[in-house]
Length: 115
Length: 116
Image 1 (cartoon, rainbow over the protein chains, first blue to last red):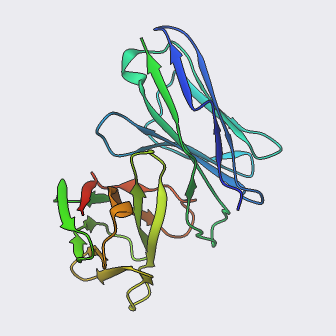
Image 2 (image 1 turned 135 degrees about the vertical axis):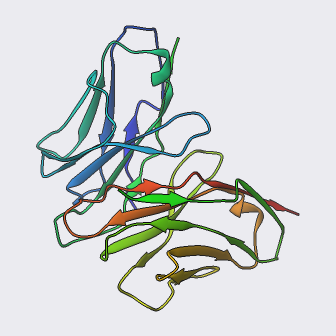
């Protein structure tokens, strides 16, 4: 079965650079979520999109932005990178809607290293 | 706000034995979902099992079952006949039902090691 695809798998950037992470949800999934997992930490929710509109916002820095496109894929843009941004970034997808609570399916994550 | 607590940073079990991972949560919501996710060394997040709060019956998925105690706000995971492939970090997670579109709150995780 098709899964959530994230690219790239690994990314190395220098401080103050910009990074773009991409997420392709499972077909027919209309909701995408982004999570950040620092070393040895539990995943923290960043932001989510439902039907191309931002649906929820967590602890996402102002330096980060994200959007969901017409084909439902999503991109997380990170600017002015800091050492503390080094983490594993997970994307997850589900079929959303206020009365539909399907479980989240996670991608394999993008490991971002900021040097 | 919701909180999820996993009080066991690490657990170990012998192959073929049974192990129980603990999770407690705090919420004022009445409509919510609880999940256990597995994160093996590959770092992928894999859904193990989920429980709807309105269901009294404990969820079961093959060797995995939960003990959901709503009044006590407890949601433990029991793994029977443990296998080497069960070695992973396990996260308990909480999601408010209704309009929250799936934002999960995770516990701190429990590292489970299955020994041969």
